[in-house]
Length: 275
Image (cartoon, rainbow, N blue to C red):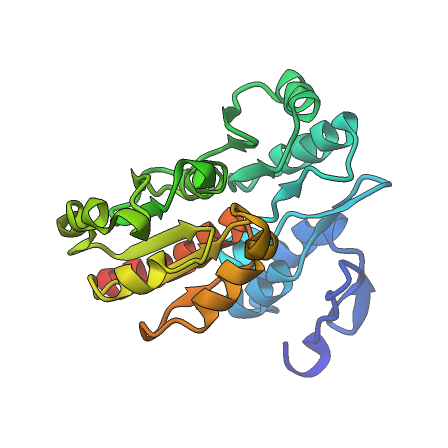
């Protein structure tokens, strides 16, 4: 805001409206009333709301409005959390009036059971659980895995894309050790919006696909492989050194991050089409 209407809400703390500090959530009505009265513009109010709020659960501060700011909702990362904590954080997100997707990632069986017991309606796919999946969007995204050993990462990617309203086609077991398998599905990589390529071992599948399609490629190295694969570092370095131009590379085993990168690309494409 300009002048006396400045805001300071980066920490989820106070908001200054008309020179007076206000706590954000209890005073949203006042903010809306000021918009109605013409004292604050709709754009200024939007700027306040984009930085607010977070929910304080005592052990976690959950970012309700990340969905508004970025188009991507904060996820619940399972490792390091108790089953009850996972369930409580999911419940906190679902309590928001904003119907954003809620994604629990890398969860074990006990975390999944606790989260679903407290929050019915979630859909589990491998170690990922999704609530509030968004309506289906008109976009073509393909998830390709090199081998069966890469499927866990591919499923994490697929589940996250579904949360954001995308229905990915999944192509499995087309690694370059049997290049004819990839060539047999090459036509399915044409006329698509994004391709996510998941591979371990030496990590060359993204380079091969990069020579077959004009679509943006998000590559994910996996920790699948023998000793010299170095738990995915060989695949990571191979993808970073790819001869195919313009490949985006995620961290090792990061199917969730790949899905979010694809969602950002697809959202921009959708916006350009709509305009």
